[in-house]
Image 1 (cartoon, rainbow, N blue to C red):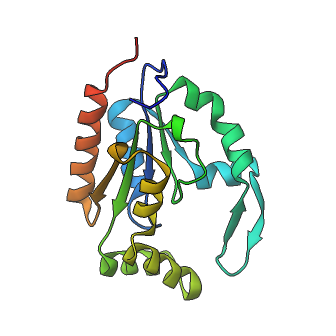
Image 2: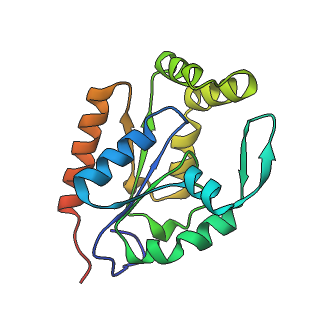
Length: 177
């Protein structure tokens, strides 16, 4: 349970990892299996204009973290959310009951990102993030280590196993009284 002794009846889960590790695939399957709400932060930023413009070098929006947090606050207090994003250090610690960091073998990740059209700095930056486990370290620095779990996500079998593991955790999650 989250450290603040919240009264949520359903847990909040953050699924994070380098782009291409299977966050959205895992989160979508997890939402279908559990009935929790899935929020893809990249989609939310685009749909609600929660950004400060476009980064030409990285070919992505520069998200406004304060606007994102303001947008999510009520839903997060209610509980029952799966948040899917490649960063995690700006979300309030109190929001999450478990932080799942997906990790993928670098050769698998390189192929996935290349198929998405990543190239240049965008491709190399993401591969380096995975090599140096930047997202795992960020999660461990931002949240209590006992709620951070790392799961391998190289193929569909891994994703299926991860969804099952997280679903089992949700079923055993103690409701606050």
